[in-house]
Length: 184
Image (cartoon, rainbow, N blue to C red; front, side, top):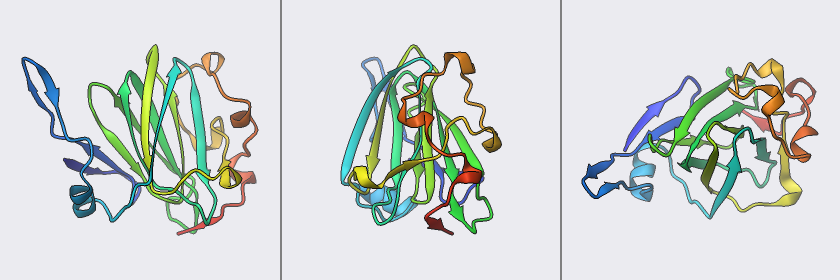
């Protein structure tokens, strides 16, 4: 696997080595040993999957301490624009984001450590999205910032009139109204 650093420390893109032949392809989607050698020590405890249609936007989610989560995400069908926003108070990149297109063809994965809000927008007709978490889901710690916060400067590549959000995701605060529980 190749690890590609981004403009924000800790956020990395992972490109697996894909072996293709007449039968199709094969790649190792996760190796604990290689991940720890090239990225960081981690113990994933939960895998999640969602299926969404074009225009669905999910996020920007995170879990509050003491149940913070790191995530390793990928799109196994279709295409999504995946985004992580730095919400660590005192960080030189606070409020900045990295956006990565994840598709079934590029097989890329995106690692989002603790201290970041995460979300994605579905760019294809449908998308199947998978992610590994290093902490179990705790509903009482579930939180988010507004996925439509214009101050973040995110181009979601979805026209606003085509965006589909859950009721919960329409109620998150803007970053400027948000009191972060994370520090750099």
